[in-house]
Length: 100
Image (tube, rainbow, N blue to C red):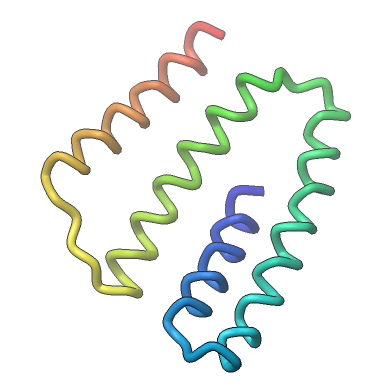
């Protein structure tokens, strides 16, 4: 699920970097990918997974993959404070898995 969302976000980011009409080639697939992710959420919820647990796991995985994509593909710089925030996100996931 998280990777599907990151793929949709990638398409939207690529769309934002293009002139208006050319951007539709990226925006439409991004929107369709977002719509498809609803089916993934439906599947997750039919497995009786707690919404709060699913949301935290999803968010942390999305954060990590967004950072990797932004650093290695878009060559964006990550500031030390952002690394601290990412570390806290990972710690929250560890706490959730350990005590939930």
